[in-house]
Length: 134
Image (cartoon, rainbow, N blue to C red; front, side, top):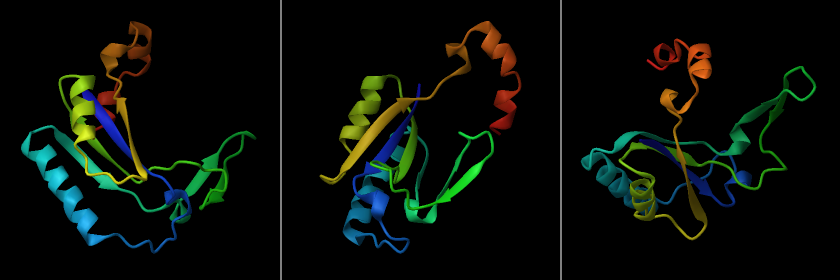
């Protein structure tokens, strides 16, 4: 089973483009990342720049509308993610609990949808999806 662990640093929605990271916290996170890798469960991981450097494209009017960050209505935003492959939701939770997150960080765990999760009709409509991921 693949799970995405989404890091939600509270307050990151208002972080400036030149936000500075604490080297000690980065070192602690690197030790955690190495543990994921050494256990053979890590697929990929990345950190994300703050929303002040991003853009959102909405489609409510039927025409794409671009809004540059920061986004006033945001309460929680992603700061980064890990993609892991483990045997169960419980194992994914156990890995998330080991993260050296600070008091202002939350990790959300979401299982990745597999084609086998869908009806034959949806699988047929998504034919070729696996080729797109390579």
